[in-house]
Length: 345
Image 1: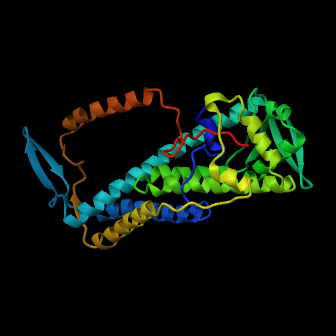
Image 2 (image 1 turned 180 degrees about the horizontal axis):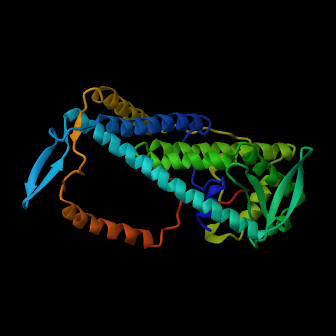
Image 3 (image 1 turned 60 degrees about the horizontal axis):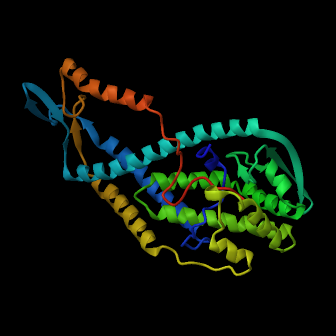
């Protein structure tokens, strides 16, 4: 269950974020949208630049067999490079999305088996439903993509006082109202897929920090402005967790103490991302006008004789079968900026 829990838990690791949390979500969304649009445009542009012209394609003879490969100009070569980057990014996002959905189904099935009862917690006059599940560890988190729910372990119900429980549920209620599990998942998918924009990882970390600070703010309001219940709940839930325990980032701690601060944006990475996206768009805008790729219906460097094609495809087919049968690594959306597993408080 280590990777499954990631789909719904919105807490951050203890490592501090080095970006301005308030501006990070908008910057992340803008850069991700630009990078994704450039990737899709590059792949579509290459497909449109290809024309079937057997007379223009290049051919060579190797061992008595005629092999063909496309004829491309310099502009098409540039577009191909951009398209390759875009195709890799789209493939990474597709692969990770499939794994996330698979793990989400497993997680939902696990929680259904562990679920023992439902109850409500009153927050500022509102009755908030929560789902209780059997566990000897103190855990609380918001789970679910389209319809997020608040989950509390049976250990949490016995370990926390009523005021602490109210603060914890208020914290998770904020995540539920903002659909933070889905937003976090999409942000991590984009950061992982668009690998050529390293700023996205840092910005996503800061966006999640912003979500935690907003959730803490609601918990404080539910506690009449007192930070002690939430702080006590965090301490109680983190004790005894060992190496799998979680921490609280310095930024969250500052906000709980009434001393909010801001850290500088990673201007270098953001500038690099802007240059990268601008270069991709410029290449597509100019090169696609004159890019030409002439090819035959035959695959590149493949003989037109069926027996040779079959012999060449056999090793690839055996390799694909071996990869399919090999047990997959259960890591789903573990990202470069921290573990995907965490606990909420």
